Image 1 (cartoon, one colour):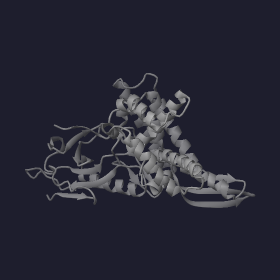
Image 2 (cartoon, rainbow, N blue to C red):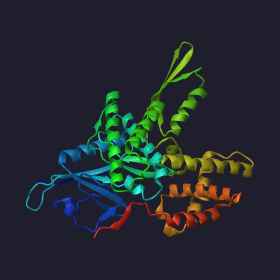
Image 3 (tube, one colour):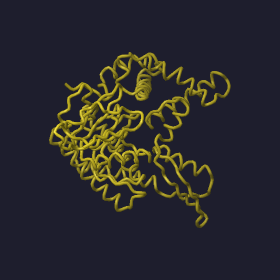
Length: 407
């Protein structure tokens, strides 16, 4: 057999790994141990510089198929891990065939659902987690993907300005179509409800689930959140007129939900207008794209929304201070160099890596508001950062992904 390791440009070739040895027996200085959840396959993690990659061992046809699915989902704007490569034609030292392997880039600062329970109160966690998984399912269904195995265990969660963002990490059972039928969506949701309840029963058995949490009720809540979001995104709007302001209001609602707009259609019917909008899944989203254009910062959608609000506030202050209008691009550049970067520089260097820069800045903004409320006045940036570092950041675990090196 001839070994073939196919990788995408911009990533390592991975030819220095022990492809002639089953993954469970790998021994390499590149091996690392991230925060991770259980898997039906053997998965090992390897580090190349600051980047970390997951290598999953599975039959060659499945590895190649999942590689193609993840790439297509990424092209369609879905929230999935990045498929980097696939290894085929593996054999051991005696020439006996080994399974293939899928290589994906590990999502930094992401955590499996079990790890999140050790990091915040369950009462605060459930709405965020269910919202994130429901939005992931909606996004996948909008691009025509039938998951077939949706569960908390098959997703990774990442902090996003006080919320959570969910990413698909296992597309092995999925199918990609131009568009899903109502029956396909219903079946996928039925599987999701059953799997999520099973995930929660597992937590219950291990003693990690609060007694007040009922797994079937929580799983049903996931479907309720999905149904609400799906209806909001796909419903037609009946308008009193074709006024642009009315249309803009609907577009803004979709943008605020984290979705973009494709084609729009207006049809007159009995003196009223029916607005149909094709909801489009595009990454980065509306706020993320705007922030990227203005500042060069590529962050999560809710983080982008929060940072844009701060830029707008800073711009207003500049206009009052300077006595004349300030262009948005000028305000964003000055905010980046006079607010964002100096604020992060106030955080001790050894603690900055605990959170992503955008999430760190967002949490400092939130903490400044709380301590100012407590003091009855604006305490200022420096005092807020000192308080945040002392009361919050110093106690947080590092979420960058790598915890320890494998022996």
